Every structure is written in C-alpha cells, then in structure tokens.
Length: 128
Image 1: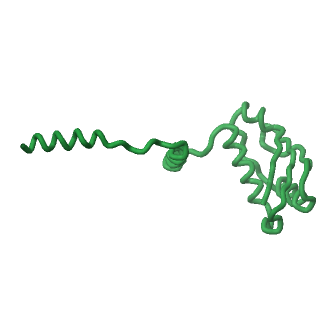
Image 2: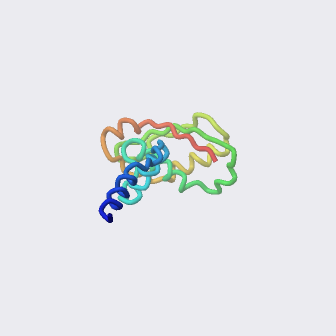
C-alpha cells in the first residue's frame, strides 16, 4: 500500500505545471548570475557603461542639472586618453559642467582593438 501511495505522489507531482518563464525572468536570472560570478557587462556595452560612470563620478552638484541634458562627442586614443571633445547639443551650463567632468576623467583602459575601433569617436548622452 505504501508503494502505491509513493508512486501516486510522484506521478501527481510530475503533472503539476509550473508557470511559463517570461523574458523578465530571464533578464533577472542573467543579472543574478552576473552578480554571483562577479561578471560585469562585457564588450562594447560594458565599456560604454564604465566610461559613462567614470565621467559621472566627476560631475559636481548633479542636482543642479535636474531635467536637463547634454550630448558630447569625444575622441580617445588607444591609451584611453581624451584627444578631442565638443558639444553636440544640450543645456549650455550642463554641457560646460559635463565638458569639465570629461576632461577630469581618467577613462578605463580600452580592453581590445574591436572596442577601440568603436569607441575612438563616441557620442555621450547625459541627462539628469
């Protein structure tokens, strides 16, 4: 009798349907895996995020630019040093502040030639 109950329990457990996975589940699973492994975004997207974060760490009083935006064009050499910077568009005061922040930034090393080719001339969008 016990064997029949165990077998019936196992059969019924196999019939329970789990909810289908959504794309959001996959995004969070990937994020959790990256956190657990210490993996950060890789490739061009990862470098762009690190570059953007490096610049933002040099902005003074970001609250003063709430609701404003600025787009800058920069050029980097292979050593990840700024060679040119120009304002594309945006709030003049914020663009001056962002230009100063970019000039003060020590950019992260460019990991490989492919990323350098894509990032040597970059457009950076900032909005607060």
